[in-house]
Length: 125
Image (cartoon, rainbow, N blue to C red):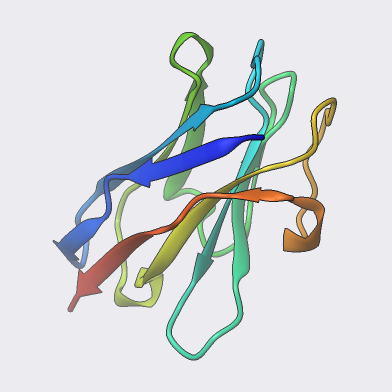
């Protein structure tokens, strides 16, 4: 069983930055494969970013040029650096792990069986 714990959320003014962390445990990770999603009030959960087995990254249009996903395999941790934050980025952010053996994680939340509890990000205008 995989456990994921997010941290790093908070309240920030528009234009500011936050770095979210997702610590993974319960599985032997040689290279972490992970996705980040977010859910704003009254909206469905949406894909934000993913990192693949070979380190390749992919971002939703909403975060391109502002968000960076990275990982520290020694710490079993994935990060989401968010810069130039906007009020529209306000949401609960979740990290999610795909099944063991996944090379390129999907864009749909249905392909991720393991989820963290979420961390709130609030961007004030």
